[in-house]
Image (cartoon, rainbow, N blue to C red):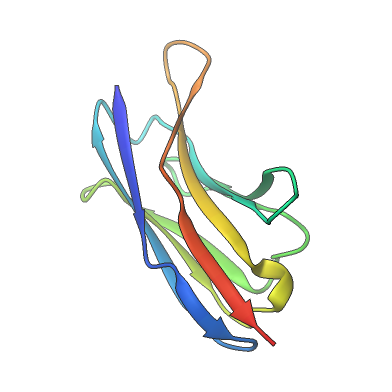
Length: 117
């Protein structure tokens, strides 16, 4: 089992920045691909970014050039640096870790990000 706890959300004005953290515990290692999804009110959850244990990254087109995902394998922590925030970035941000041996995904409880115009 893997437990994930997000932090760092909050209220920020458009153009501002936030850094989200995702602390992992349990059976987590660099073999687990990790990433972020977000869900705006009334919308489906959407992919934001992912990162492998080796540091390969993937981003949604909507955040490329503004968000940076990273992870510290020694601390079992993943980060999402969000710059140039826009109101459309508002939502609950969830971190995840993919299982290694079987298919499936672990999820955190989410952290709210609100960007005011």
